[in-house]
Image 1 (cartoon, rainbow, N blue to C red):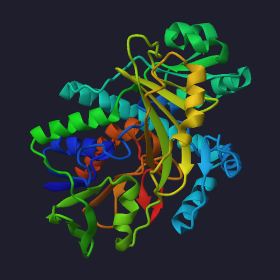
Image 2: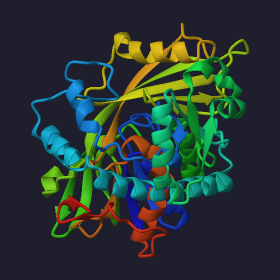
Image 3: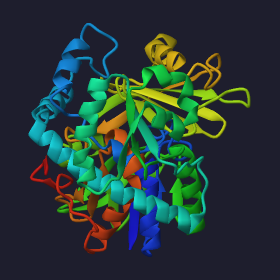
Image 4: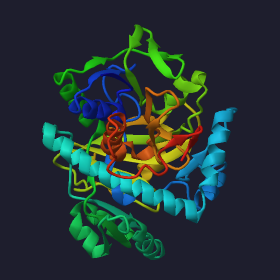
Length: 419
């Protein structure tokens, strides 16, 4: 059976690998010059079941509203003349209550934990390197009130089997001496012992080479323009390099997934949420954190990656624009400098902005469509790196008509709705 995987981001590459492992003939196609050249290019780097909370919460509408006149909100709303944006925002706001947030968090935590197990298996199978760190992640709080609330809230994740330790200030610094200069700003932290970190782009390209060695037909610099259907099946896809036929197709094009299937009568609830990252060089004279983590009061994520430190922040609902200016990073850089003044060379930043393919629930869509040979593995949002390996295995199991290892609650696409 020949399967074409559309998209070579972290979701597409891991899907190609799992399908090859199951004995399928695989063609992997992407418009970029190599793997993980878009959303996964410079993401936060955190593999974080211990941070699987739903973004759609009772706090989110207030942040979105304040962001209309303030630029320091973790979630920013930039209204566009785009009905797709407003449709997505309506769906997101519909999830912004405590009941839905709890349900979505539990489902995300289940998928994230399973996916981390699958990633560890892939690394064991392949031996690939990606600046990985399996020492856990720290999520710290600046106020005692926020810390105490978080310690209560983490019971949701513990209920899904995620091990989280509650640390006071001294225990936090003991766990990661690289945070010593931030001692006065840390009231306490949650330490997720099984969380990891690493460079998603390094991982994707290394795994892509393993796919090539396993016989995959990999086609970069190839833009997919449309899918051709015949009745209830997809016959082929049109690219700028010609037609490509296959027995089955897996759609993993991230924020562009809805564009490709719109002419088939499908409306995927996937919309871009822009994120910003800075990568800083680290030398022997610097004192970076040894573990990745998040300054929770500001939702500033940091991740050591060998001789680099990655900083990420902000969720901006602003359309498909990836442009950025140095001023867009000022707030993030100020927070980082104040928090970790000797962690890296702040004079040599590499700026980047990318688009997360978000669904209103924060869960990906992993399902067969009304076309019996078209499958979806898309919409992983801000946790694509964490969810990728598990989502890929679920996709392969569905195609092979095997029982999936975890339930797909919230990940189905039935009647044009995510369920």
